[in-house]
Image (cartoon, rainbow, N blue to C red):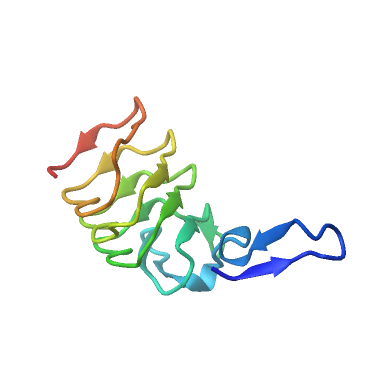
Length: 131
């Protein structure tokens, strides 16, 4: 993890560069016709899903969109409705997620091999796939 010493302000303060700056739109492959993130090409391991990409609302994470990306945490945007099949699978270090109240469907295998020890889901969830 890269750190930036802020000695001119306080020599005891460091800034985690990887988590202090959110992912940018270019870090995601995106289908504007469906509002679906179809892939992740960024390098951050703590990811915040944007509410929009190119002004289009992000409403879904597609199949295997974040497969084996080494994520440790993810914050889903309010407005996200669907987490696709295998979308976050293979992220054994993924231990933290914040789910939005808008989330309605989590498809089969969305979190296979993720490192969660517990998960708290919202009341509005309508469908939870196997695994």
